[in-house]
Length: 452
Image (cartoon, rainbow, N blue to C red):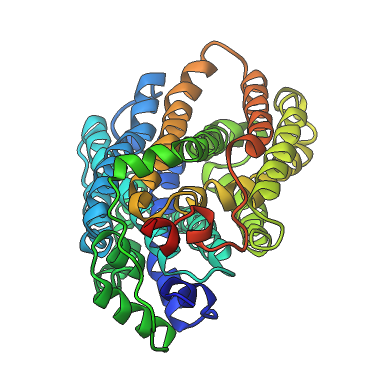
């Protein structure tokens, strides 16, 4: 076996578990920070003396972090070409400082600016964490590691934010302090893994393929696998633009599927706790907690189990399809479900479970971007797919409130249903299957292919 094959065949170990926690807690923070604004939106606006946010104000407040994440992903996608570990920890550091600063925002526009900075850290994490986890992972468990470390951990973060808000409310804390504490507490999970990230070893794939340091790569592989190497991996000396051109079609295909996923799911993440919750007779925090506990996190966990068994493309396509059909059924219930709110919520649950099991576990976990690009361009390819997803979230954040001023809520849910079905149709056209295959096999990134 060559060096990377030893990494691929290494059984799940303590190292893999620690790596999954270290990377996953960053995504826990992402889920906490990006979902918490939706459940404290009204508290914050009232605190600033705004009776009702305009569509533009609502879009900027919920979307500023998403715009920042585009900047963060773009910058750190390029920087990670000089080293994954070198910049690992900066991402959660930025998130921690910005999250803490939110609690002291004196007004709406200052909060928007702080969340923009927060988004830069989130975007950086969305590039660095999946890239590092994938390059350290073994072949058999790579899908479930990324799905749990990203899709499931994102949901746990959202649940924690809802529980904290409910707890503060029951403790009699004023609404002005509630939203400040909830947003500021996002610093805690980010700081919890700062030192672990700084101590994580550089990936052997980067050291060998990009940095050209075969001796350092050998030491990392031997440290992870516990076995001596007889063959050092080859350095990839091709220009990154040449390599990117060869893989551009699948990279942009992965970005498109993440965009579609985020358009559909973030519309409900950002505005479900306010718009949909009212139609169902639930509070913002209650809606978020019920949705994540009953449907989204269980769906993510099922996706973790299935992603390495049934494959990426079937899980992605079927999930998009079921979610789209469920939304078509759910749409008219928004105006007629006065006597049957639980039926409407159950149908929403079918959508949420299917979206989490399929698209969330594959596209939303960053799995496609890191699997479908060779090491030479992996961080850049991941940045492209992250930006694709963030464009989807920006469309949701700014487009959802504007559209609601011109069309009915059932009509908008119908648009999201059609978008989800489009994702199901495009899946088999845009990306190849990567189940059970090494990163080198998927991308023709073997030593022999590079040397030739």
